[in-house]
Length: 217
Ligand SMILES: [Zn+2]
Image 1 (cartoon, rainbow, N blue to C red):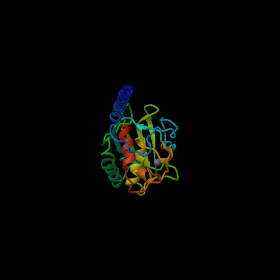
Image 2 (image 1 turned 180 degrees about the horizontal axis):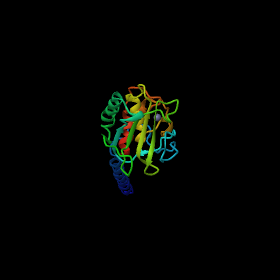
Image 3 (image 1 turned 90 degrees about the vertical axis):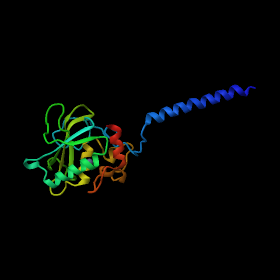
Image 4 (image 1 turned 90 degrees about the horizontal axis):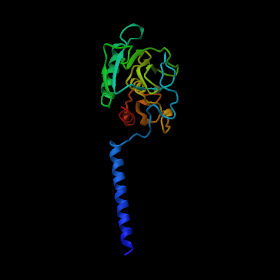
């Protein structure tokens, strides 16, 4: 006889915890498979999104929204050769296109105002560290999180390859190296895909980067 109320209480507790669990499961939505958070900002990516006149070594901005327009310099000393342009277009269509980002080539780029072309590719070594073949920097910060226009500089002489274009484009949408990820991982962890550094020619995004992109945009 004293057991009955006890049993009821117990059943009710189980029911409540089931409801709570279901609520959490629904909120979480798509399964999160990423092994590390390598999307700016993390506790290791100190520095904040600001206007830069050239590469400063800090990767510190998201792009301003999920619609990513890009332009490739087509005149003067920083222009991309046809083969470089083909690599960029292929990376954007086949590697970034399937993510939640909406990517498109902008043949009439905008360099001022509040809706600038998001990524500008140049063939240039200006400001690129001696130890690197490419660099990315924000030219027009919206706030401490987001940037309206990012520049990617990649050296000439055959450096415009899939892996490096994927890598620098990753920085332009906020992806970080392993040593800025949370939890920290090796810069050469294979699961970082093209965000490994140094970057192999054939690398693509892989699951961790895709999960971080789709969880952000
Ligand atoms: Zn990098």
